[in-house]
Length: 436
Ligand SMILES: [Cu+2]
Image 1 (cartoon, rainbow, N blue to C red):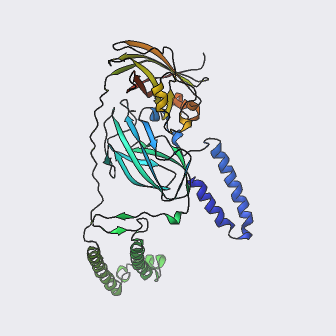
Image 2: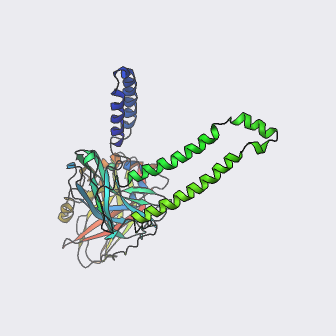
Image 3: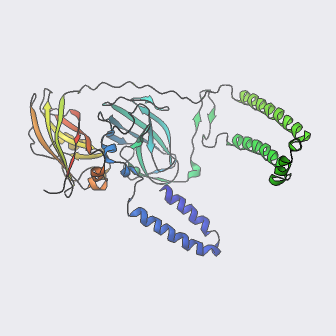
């Protein structure tokens, strides 16, 4: 979308003179070729499918994702959107990237089309970076405000030091209106209201750039008005070093030093006068307390065998499930890389998917389990789980087979007879199969 806006802008610029029609044609052709190149690989979206499957399956699992607007909603410039939900940091974090000791909660959008007004992990403001512990789940909340019109794909995202951005599920939001109407007003801690943070004090920025630019320009002109390289080289060769810098040069240099230092002192003084309190940008890390998981250890899952059947786009997992809970349980959902596979035999699981989650990320076919009977308290049962959907291909997770690390990770959602959900991790090696 960002690219398209840029191209549109360029197009308008080209069209400004009718004598430039030839250029337009050339431009159109190059755009066409460029578009074909893009379309042949990615239909839409902005790169979330290009991340290696093991990165998407073994890092973050986003669930209970909610948006304050529906997928494909249309909103106006200045409207707010809230992204909320849970993000689970997988225990078997890939070795090739840093552990999430330094992370930053953000949003993935095509450029600054939204501004981020607020963000929280477990209700702690995420203005700064933080660190989290593997195997834990955190509540995220990101509040955005629409800034630039267009049709945008909006995700929650966590930046992990060394790994880059790991994105959650995204929805499409169309922003209508005029970007010039965007208002970003804030009140400072001293009670001063800033009408528009986007343009705040830009006059000062221009003024000071102009002042320093003028001084720099004067200094350059002072030296280049004289014969330059060859003549000075000859003087050096002749041993006439002292003639290179005249007494006037030295006097001017000294006055400039005095002038610049004086200017700095003066600038500092008027700034202090205008802004009594200034707080430096905060470099520390925010601390968040993890919330203990009351369901820890209630269900134990052990991967026995996992296969990816290529022609059928099916992931098959054979696992031992141990129920340490005091109620019978059933597997209701399998989720990995933002894809959700629902067991339609479990009403609570079917109900849970009905919350405006992007449809393309929910498998059309049901999660198939060879034994649908509830697993009794104290029982360990080996079950076969089939997750079949074209989404494995569409989301480019089939390239799992080309990964140097052919392993998978996912979350299993079990439901007890009261409808309570118990979340378990499952992970293991995964083998490709090409025949039935
Ligand atoms: Cu996207």
